[in-house]
Length: 421
Ligand SMILES: Cc1ncc(COP(=O)(O)O)c(C=O)c1O
Image 1: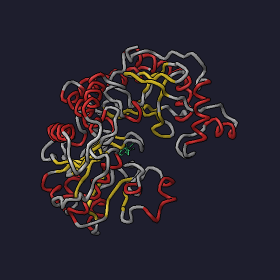
Image 2: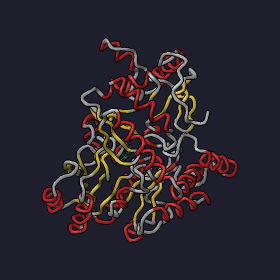
Image 3: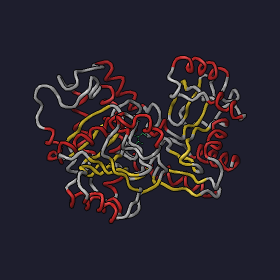
Image 4: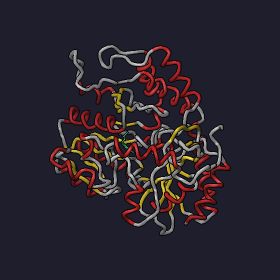
């Protein structure tokens, strides 16, 4: 298998081995994490929809524990942009594992971390050359929030409806995607968040900033999980100008859009706007957890020098295999990755367009509009045929496939989608 196979199903999905493993999972994992859809569906009188259990993945393919071959149009929440188990990423991890698996975070640095910092600085637009590393997207956004407090002395954040920045407690209050995620934890979440609609009018943004207390405007340069919606033309530049006028920092959360996902290294800068802080994660590690919040030397200097004990760190800061994997991804980004993303995105759009579907988004961060069909039901119908997708909204599917998606996979997917809607 080279990662470009079409779905090949040996069992109905989910198969017996998946069901058995999900039974075990349901006994031992917090029930809020993995949905036992069978039970929920039973209660609703609907079909059995337990998840399949992944055993292997390569390129655009996933193989489940029953040996079924599926095609992953999610790239595992956008992570495997370069393809699952890209050989350069695997080689880098292997070589790193032969040398050093774990170092000492802020106490004693290691070579892989320094390589990554240098590489990332050269991939990002000037002056974003100083990083705080983390392990998740939430960590990167957390770094942006803290940096803004230290730099501006203000605690308030202007965030946007529909935005998703992760679910860790430090960033939970910033998301405007689902109130139910924040509600049970309300007394513990960020106390000073102002929220406006994504694409808000200049006058409204100006009014919120003029009221004072806002040190950070936090925005996804394209709304990802909250609908796969590009920012209105000129909107990011407007935010840039207003942040400057009111002395706030502007942070782009490029955890989903960054590292080539939209056919350009980083979406905001490609649209002509360089933020004060830029957060990356997901695709950066090619499958290992690594993230960063990048800022200019002047902004990051607000942290002050280390006093022997870092003001912000964690045990696994700059985990060496993650750094080595990220260096491999950044080498691919410096090569033809963006060109290939642009090409795959165009072919995918054309194939879906030929079947009458409207598609929005950029590069390989796309949403297919289903013309009124239910997105969750469609995604499940596709899963049973060997295609992994996620809903973008009630009537749209989000597609964030790996760049390894082949012409044959694209054609077969478009035909299957047309058949199930
Ligand atoms: C734009 C954006 N920011 C932050 C996050 C949170 O990342 P993580 O789940 O790695 O904490 C996500 C995850 O989907 C995201 O899409």
